[in-house]
Image 1 (cartoon, rainbow, N blue to C red):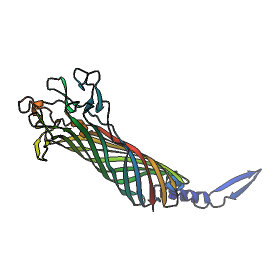
Image 2: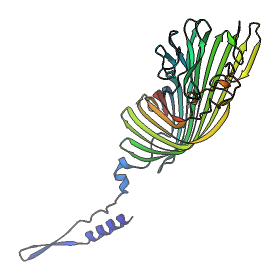
Image 3: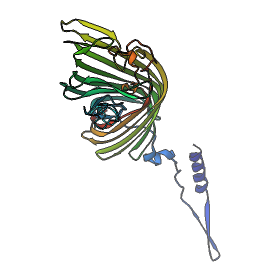
Image 4: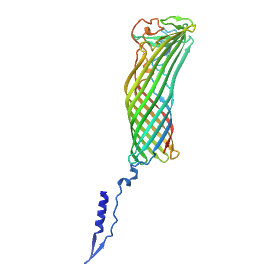
Length: 411
């Protein structure tokens, strides 16, 4: 307004002025033609690439297929084999001992399939605001280890005695037992977050957005260890001819993260292609639940069943349900490239990674220290001693990462 007033005043003054030109003794005066008033436009309109008014899509929907990999978990040695000629066959440290599962012989989830859906709406023009909702769910994943022996190959479960010395519980041993051993670990993960969004800048095909919202994630794991030996060993020791003994240990964990989230997203478009990157960080609490269960079952020759609480790694000393709350951080990063099929439809491909600090995992809850007096099939059962194994309640950082392929609809 001030610029327009100043320009009009200047034009009026110029139109009323005369310029004098002298040639010899004569004075010639020429009137300068009146100038049209100059109108100064809003400076922003002079630079259309910096226009803050939003003219992009108002609605978008994205659907992605995910192929993800999980962080390797720590698992103590759970099963050994050995040489019958060693002084202590299958004991840790013996020449012929070899670890079949655990330690440096891990078993983990393979690639896991999942899905992600996103819905966003943009509101307003001068300072466009919007809302978005994102939901990700991974399929139920499973890792399993199975082995068996007819009694010709040693299968033994390594433990540590309370005094720190190594020992084993036999599953299959030449001349004594035939047996089988199975470990199964399953996991389930899903997360949802909702955000308010605003466009911070929109220049030359580049759009920078800010995000603020809330996030929830749930991750569960369930580890089951089952060994079967024939003939079975009764409570307090002693072989029961014609019977089958089953030892069962179970470790289950559940993580529920709740947090506030901030993020930033940058998108660049040119012709039919686009590229984008997003970073979101959520801070909050991780409510954790640990459940430990164990049992010993004897099935006699007549089919009768006897069951008592406690297996080998899950006994009366640690069986139960435990809870704790940890502070956790949940960052997520995503990189994507896209190709425009039509004005409203695009193909997408990219990379995504997430991390959750202080996460409870089932395989990390095993205490390898075992008091034989708490194992129902031990000859020392009921004779007292330290309460081991104990509940560990361990946590560690957990991450998943992988690739995504999907489609985006814009309107």
